[in-house]
Image 1 (spheres, rainbow, N blue to C red):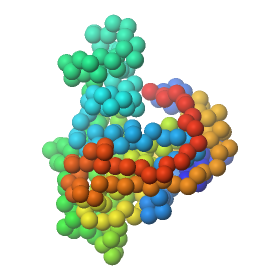
Image 2: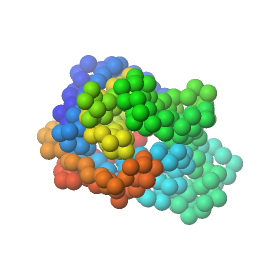
Image 3: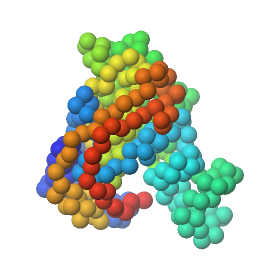
Image 4: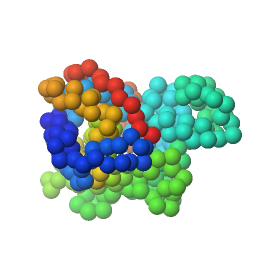
Length: 290
């Protein structure tokens, strides 16, 4: 994962200081690309521990088309909690509940979750119902039956629905590419906005995993994941954490094992996805900017 450290150093050395929507402030560059050969190992960051369980459950949640955080909360995945909580705080039902109290209510009260756990038409909704189009189904059918098409695309950026989303999509468009020998599937992701310390390690792992899942159901092998960025930034309150991480040497990559019996993207479950030989340095905590 030297590519990730190179990105951190590029931002520190060449980035400019900018104000941002969260008022935290960032150091930012515009336009960057990393490439990961998925045949060499699974690109889960090793210079800090990344919670792979959360990566898997979030991706499977996207695939279902769900936009309510309750399925994630029930599996102790916390990565989306702050955004619907921010909406809940502005509602008439808010009664000074803390974030932890809000999450407990989401977990234990289906009616409350239905009302206050929704993120609006975010990723899963757009993947499975973009103005009535199931993009994921179309993508898989296209790869299977017209592998050399240049239209193997899924977009999460739907201008007609942005104002109803708790957070407009950051990782907003992906394109897939079948190798000339019809053996490998590669993916390029365009990410308009990237929190490099907290978000990007998850994004790399999530779209690498997605590439593996789609490759399997299309009788292909995962080839390359290409990660292309617009505004790629380090938040000002993550600088100490980044410095600590850069002191650490990358470790050998883990490997992914999927249940080979799964041939439909909707049939994958958590237990069908196994990460082997993951080694990492300890986790590094940091605050998320909402």
